[in-house]
View 1 (cartoon, rainbow, N blue to C red):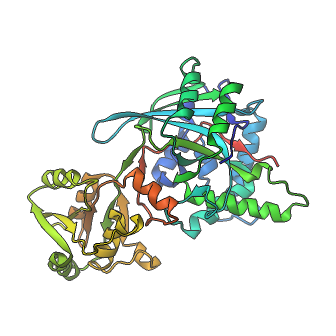
View 2 (cartoon, rainbow, N blue to C red):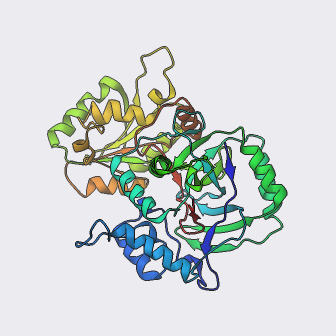
View 3 (tube, rainbow, N blue to C red):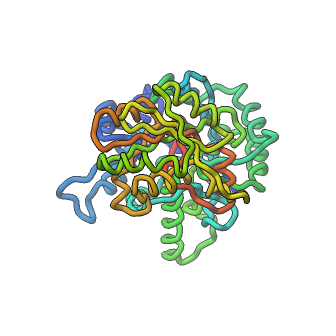
Length: 429
């Protein structure tokens, strides 16, 4: 895989004294209330680029995307954003504490990776995508000709050769950016400009493939944008800037790579439907009832990595632990035996009659990583069910992806989300 250094566009510290005031979470997790807060926080907050809002009188030539492009041009001309003089890699360390109190540091190498279509054996997706987010991001990319946020990918490096090169550099150089406790974590960024380290890292990636952890929509958008420009070009070499995109690359074996479970919240169910689904559970599941949430979670977590299991709460005071019965003697592919696959097929679809492949049914399913929020969701309304899960293993993500199988949406939650705004990539070609 070709992973190159690039001339990063960054906030100018002489103009922006506190970088914590201008960075933001990824666009797709920012809710309206937080967006407004970020906009008010600073006139140059990156949310004004990644999540510009439409106006009623917008036209084809003046709209949320053209406003973003204008903002980007103005910030560059005003030197709010400055571009490094030479190509570099960047190193991004994010230190955080998980919801259960464990402390980690996750390290990412930031570079630009060559775009390859899925199926070429270089970049593998692990989740399905939707059309609307891709159309939105494509319009933004067309207007700005810039990667405003890197996507998050995994690479395998059991011996840790790439990280050794990175550590050798970062251990003796102070970070350009050091932001304490914003969005639940601290953020440090180094500009890796050592020629020898750059050569070592670039060479080490040549025989590696990548698995997308977060950013499937943006990767497919970058492919579509590349294809558009390639068709329009009088000459095309394959080395133009738009053949690459900015990536946060994290070692798959890293102890700082944390995946949380994403629980399913069902709504719009009749009391009869819920009652009938509960009655049918013993046909497909071994069911154990626990008296409280804590007991359920202890037993659910004890089964993580050993067998498929779910928790279910319907508001009737019973906390059910469900273990699907496995009848097949032959081992199915990983995509068929994942917890999330079995949950959707056996319980959400067969039990509650919700088929998430049907657009009209998708509105009945929402998601949260917070267990207490999931239980409270049921207690606060009628016709609701909380389905609790164990996290998907990184090894399962890799196995499914490299087997060219995709998981249901929201199969993984790599925790925490990476900050947007530490560095950008201009597509000048």
